[in-house]
Image (cartoon, rainbow over all chains, first blue to last red; front, side, top):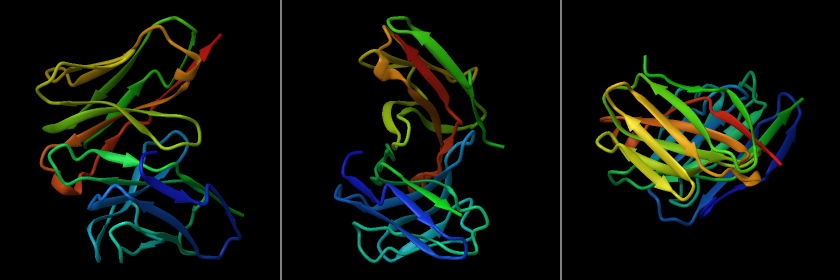
Length: 113
Length: 115
């Protein structure tokens, strides 16, 4: 898990409520990423940020929002507009060198009922 | 369409045995190919990373090979241990992805090592 923390590990919400997932890194990485993992599917990119105060949509951004006010933090909000929010959410961070290696956090399992 | 396909979907082996996991990709050109290990309910952890010019990379009992001509990679696990039980994910980074680094993930092979 390196220096990336995600909290909480398990999160339960009622349908129609927004919920924010936390991601913090102390690796001094410029880039941060949010992925969603569903059974039988590869990780899918939700949002990514290469620098503070800037972020871009990934492949499945609808129903999600992010902010990047600090280098260390990249919180993800799952809004009520996300039709199927129940999933395992992974945050990652990475350097901007040629390896573009990404280091993943431990994940947050969100269950919406 | 850039895709990464892994086989088998799942595999059961006895402790101490060897196994090989396969990864076929259509991403071209690509910058590097990685194998990750993901324990249940945890984040993926990098095992190996190979550039397009490398043929093999080892990390302890894990050895990854790459054939850029056939667009295939394999992950060989030697003398398996119970702690090797996990999902193994093949990930390809398209060339020119740059800092956006939009990786292409396979769906993984779920390995169960039994005593």
